[in-house]
Image 1 (cartoon, rainbow, N blue to C red):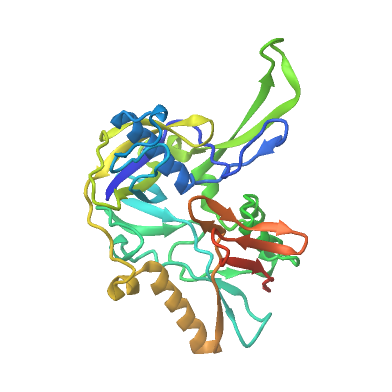
Image 2 (cartoon, rainbow, N blue to C red):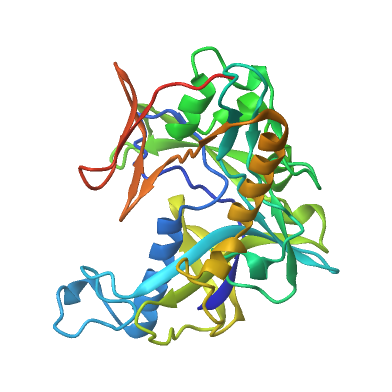
Length: 346
């Protein structure tokens, strides 16, 4: 695995896996981090350019061992992206707050739900889902105060109709602004709306009904020249083939082809412990923290329920939850994977 740092040099726009059509959607928001598939595609496009692979090649009996072809995904794999913060004295990685929740089993409706948040004092080397990055010994979590082991969700965070949880599962980006669960986000991701129109090539005038607004964001790097934010990404291959890329350069990322500067932080990093390794699994920040929260509750309250919540299933593309007349559902890439949101009480 090789570790790269991506630093946006302009605003970023990462809407979703859905298209944006001017005239159909008049206003759209962006999510803070680029989709894994977006970063994956950007690195493949860079690899195609370096290896001389063009769209005209089509199917090939000898695809590139790493990049494949336009119709063959090759052997590239990635971990990330994570938000990366660098200052003169230390470096740290921010992880999104996990959605795992714990509630009391025998007392429904009594007591708050609690986040299973990772312990920020555990080093990156104990995270079985990441590769250790030299110099990074702190893992922070967006939307949480420093040193907090678990966070209560107050009643007002869950609306009577489960609107908040529904918005999360449906990938409605406004759910965070409703709750204020992520105050650091506003300081890191600075909003910068962009307004555009569609012009007629014949008349050179604006087409009626095609005014739109896209809410870009800019990472808060310009607030302090000594500190910078970027995206931490680890890329490798499933077949052990070496990735041959320049150590630094610029490519386009996300909607509207926004420019991003990339640089190599470390090459040929050892792989993390596999999930089949009991020791590696025990040292996972998610597992360790979840056990800590459960132990604190069971010692005083008794049995519990553990809610494992995800905004969707990712297999080749995003499979988010969908809202129908009868409820909120997700249908996975295979017919056996189905889930329905029944409701949750604060």
